[in-house]
Length: 121
Picture 1 (tube, one colour):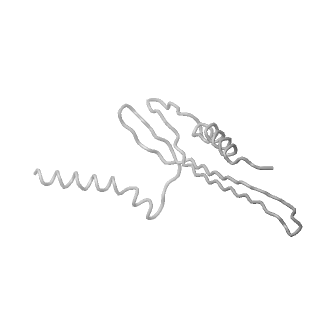
Picture 2 (tube, one colour; picture 1 turned 30 degrees about the horizontal axis):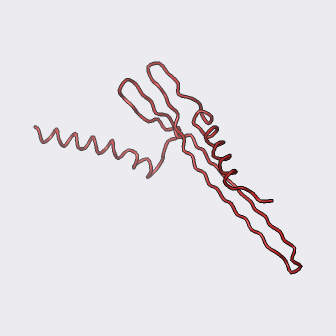
Picture 3 (cartoon, rainbow, N blue to C red; picture 1 turned 90 degrees about the horizontal axis):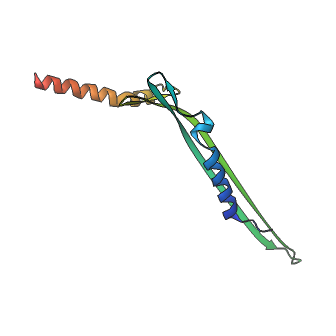
């Protein structure tokens, strides 16, 4: 029996295209008053395949193959729009050092705005 890796990969890829979507994990985009909320996910996948054949000392021939795949899907949060404004609302909050890094763009923006305001006065 010879396995056709290309066929298996096509079938797995087709399955992922149809099932590994934000809609199947946490739902479709929805309206909440004047806000439009779009779910965001993180997806990772891995594939492995191996095969071989050989003969023993009695000239008996044998072969085998195997394949495996894994997928991980994690809801991250929502892109939220209101008019021309777009923001990201995470589904979980960060703590410690990662929270500080996430706040750095806002802190830097406020710092630069304050510095610019001070230089114009």
